[in-house]
Image 1 (cartoon, rainbow, N blue to C red):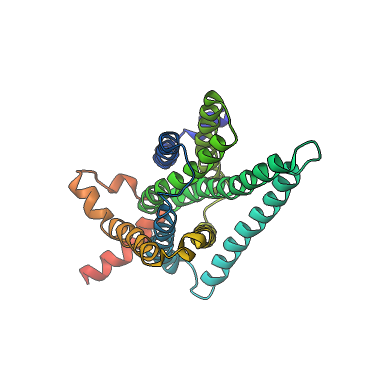
Image 2: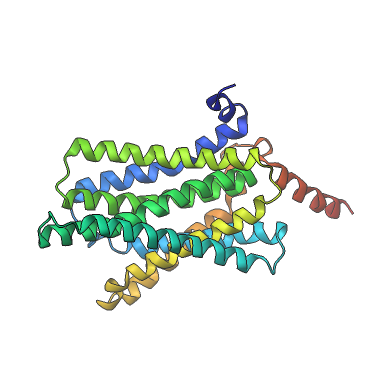
Length: 293
């Protein structure tokens, strides 16, 4: 049996692919948005605090309740810290390599400065994208409803990722076909990392799966904090109220969606019984017994 046969052998793996494809929609929307605007994030800079609010809601409303049911409460902060530290280390290492490559001796000072700014922005976006893909795969392996919520929230986050990358491609005078090829590559990378994470979790067992979910919760927290801090120029320019409202709207909107996900599935006529994973089924059994008792 080939690796392709293994990855698509069960229905649950097709769910992981479906969720990563859903998150990929954000990459397409962000690219089209940037192509039409043909400018940096200026008029739409409130997208950054809005996405940061969504990422914080992902951790607070979806990952935290799941982790509290399956991981020791004293261990959760350390798993969050480990995930955030991994994000910072990856960004720092990749940023150093990208800036070193951009500042080569055969480029002019102006070109080197433009390349350095583009490289720094791209590094953070790509590291986030890889983390998002793995987070989707791990969440899909742990809980189908958690995976749906995570993929939906990361769809919005990917709009910002793609928006920033495409704006950099445009400022670097990259050809249209090259931009299309790179965007297709980003979509494939997201899907491949989600499937690899899902496949790896199932290959090595799911004993540490709840801990991995909390770890990627810390990764998302680091991405949310970095996104909010990068919006500091807009806040310094007197946009504190607008930025705060955008953050709160993103947080509340996604929190309401995550809390009402079950009702949304019922309203759409989608049964969640076939989507449940072993962790959800085992956690639901004690609740059922208590209700009967």
